[in-house]
Structure formats: C-alpha cells, structure tokens
Amino acid sequence: MISVCMVTYNHEKWISQAIEGVLMQITKFRIELVIGDDCSKDRTKEIINTYYKKYPEIIRPYFNKENYGLSVNFSQLLNCCNGDYIAICEGDDFWTDRDKLQKQVEFLDSNPEFILTSHNFSKLFESTRDT
Image: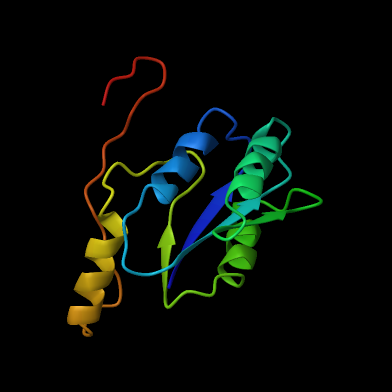
C-alpha cells in the first residue's frame, strides 16, 4: 500500500483537482489518501468531507482545531500514514499521469538502493493559465 500525504490550508480552488489526481491513479496496490487541513477559513474542509463520504475506504481526513502551520501539520500527517511508501501531493497541486504511483513503486521495488523518486512538473499560473 502507498499513502498519499496531502497537506492543505485554504485550497478551496484547487483541492478537488488535487484529490481527483489521486483517485484517478491506476495501481496494482491499495492507496490511502491522508489529508490534513490546517483549519482553513474557506470551503476546503467541506469539499474534503464531500469526497470522504464518497470514498471512505480511500480517504482519511484530519482537521486541525487550530492553525499549526505547514511544518507541524505536515509532521503530524506523516505520522498518520500507514503505507510502505509515502507520496506527497499538496492541496494546491495535482497529478496528470494516471500511472504515476505505479511507475514510482515499480521503480523503488526494483531498485532497493534508491529511497525516493521525483518527476518533472509544470507550474500553472492561475492568473494567466500559462505554464
């Protein structure tokens, strides 16, 4: 199993796309999506709960009662992950390759001398939609 660790704070505009990027993954193993919301002031919590109700077997949400900041939120969330591997996807990021996790796990399983993987990315600027 792989845990996807997703920290979020006021990501109402992007959280659905971030979650959908995880849910679209095609894998030969189970995935858990561990989402830690750091007391958002927008609709992020509501959106996460909507997905949780639809996918309770995959999504495990954690809602802080006060804002702890990125470092504490991330550290707490990592401790909640149960997977053999942990993938990071922040609440304002999203994945576009349906095979991303499968490829990375296959690589790590076949190459035990490696402890992490990375991939190319593009920045999408909200104001212009340019990359």
